[in-house]
Length: 512
Ligand SMILES: Cc1cc2nc3c(=O)[nH]c(=O)nc-3n(C[C@H](O)[C@H](O)[C@H](O)COP(=O)(O)OP(=O)(O)OC[C@H]3O[C@@H](n4cnc5c(N)ncnc54)[C@H](O)[C@@H]3O)c2cc1C
Ligand code: SF4
Image (cartoon, rainbow, N blue to C red):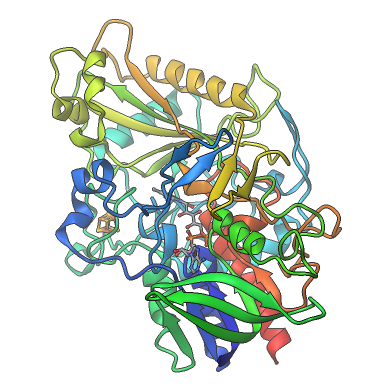
């Protein structure tokens, strides 16, 4: 059995980043990743392949609370879900770290405050090449440094929308974005600013995903090893149950075992919970680190709506994800609770509209609809509830029990956006009464999954301690989005990345 100083399971935002942070230590680090490298092929940028044929979505089947099977939007590759992410790299807002009232109840306090994570957010923004501009967004948390790169510029139609929003008294700002773009020297820029970014893999490796930014650079160190197609099945402990002694994997169909002084789980929130729940033994009969019975509970994934406004004028924008509006993040003039975040999403392409969308714009082809679409993504906070949880069925497959929470704010946010647009220069709309196609994201849209192993100070109320070490085991850590006690209403990756850097500092001390 091969022995390592650190074994990291999963190579996404959390695990990949941690590997890079630990790499210069010279310690023997093993990354175990169930997927392979995402193939670089023309299909990376083909909307039909990516969105209709789900070319890069795993074949996994999960089950809902009624045991109904569904295919979750999970991506098992080196780099994890960041291979297809939209690269919107937001910090949580300062208020997200403290208990706050929402329409559906109180969120929990985090065991650390914003100031403790701030230096790591700054490091994370530098590492992941975030482009942005501080100060325009009234909810911007304090930052110790400017963004490392200037904001990604708005194209004319989005600039026009920005100007109109400002004129109407709102505070639109540049969305913080992790891409390797140099707008002042496009011939040298790795990113070509194309229209197949959000939701697509980047064919030219110019997106700040965890493979490009973290895993590949980590592998430059001779002490770091990556095994792909290596699916971790179970973690075994010593007889005392106090430490992990063996990591059991299936690699290319064969069982293998590894051991590590420290074992870090970062499989994504649902799969990390699954791995811990699969690893029952005499000392941990409910699964590892699960004396509190909290492993798998408090699953969150945001209340999200993809909203397409169809306008009579064409929208020729290529890279659309440059604008965000947080005027209603904390409250609205007519509502005391947080509504959430508004941002753009990548420009919809014809095949991405469902065939039945024709009904919304009779006589129009799907391509015509796409040309006229202005595409928004609305995100509201969902609350971690104990009954919203990952469990395993008798085959060891994930069962995701989830009931939507805190729905009123996101519906209000949608109304706000619609009325904002009605009063802006986006009309006349395609059909007389303005046309909006809004789609609530169902539970299969697990992109923002988090919260199944929340961290905290009290072992009765949390799975992990403040350093993201399992309360009940001496050498087990979790560094993906599982640790979130609450999710806020901005995209989760930068927080997972910053936290991995923070946990990395703790581990470097421990490994000395
Ligand atoms: C379409 C899409 C768009 C998104 N856009 C954004 C965005 O714009 N901004 C943002 O902040 N976030 C975005 N996200 C979310 C973001 O990608 C995730 O929050 C982030 O990747 C989570 O990091 P993680 O480390 O928790 O998990 P992941 O990045 O998913 O990594 C988990 C890794 O573990 C591996 N793994 C799982 N189980 C095992 C096992 N048993 N053994 C070995 N390996 C295992 C997986 O293959 C995977 O590589 C998006 C997600 C999707 C799907
Ligand atoms: S916009 Fe840039 S980062 Fe995004 S897919 Fe295109 S080339 Fe890659």
